[in-house]
Amino acid sequence: MDVFYKIIGVAIVTCIAFLVVKPIRSDFAIIISIVGGVVIVFFLLSYLSDIFDVFNTIFTTSGVNSSLYGVIFKIIGIGYLTDFTASICSDTGNSGLGDKVLLGGKIIILVMALPIVTSILDIVMELLPS
Image 1 (cartoon, rainbow, N blue to C red):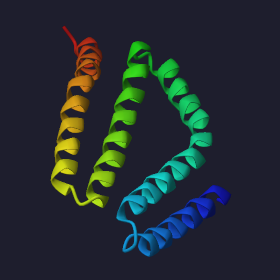
Image 2: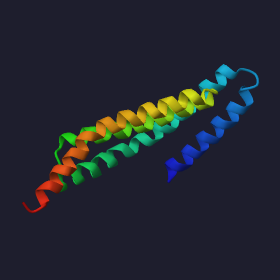
Image 3: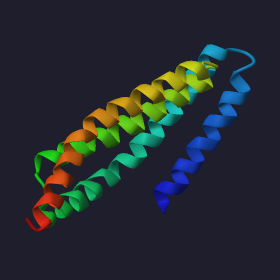
C-alpha cells in the first residue's frame, strides 16, 4: 500500500507542476508530465517479479507450451507501452495520433496473440473425443 501512496503523491505533484508550468513553458510542461509517468512506472517495477512467478506457476501446472510465456509478456508490454504513448500524445494535444498508436498496438497484439489462440485450439481438439 506504501507504493500506492507514492504513486498518488507523484501524480498529484506532477499535475500541479504541469498546471503551473504550462502557461509559462508548455514544452517543459510536457517533459514534467512524461517524467512523472516514468517515475510512477519505476515504482511499479518491484511488483514485476511477483507477476512473473505467478505466470510461471500457471504455465508449469497447465501444460501450455512454455514458448507462449514470452509472447504473453510481450503482449502485455505492448499494451501498456501503447497506452502510455497514446496518453502522452493526448497530453500534447495530438489525440488523433494517440488514437492511431492505440490502433497500431491493438493490431500488433492481435497478430502476436495468434499462436496463443492456435495453442488453445490444439488443447481443445485433444480433449474432444475422436
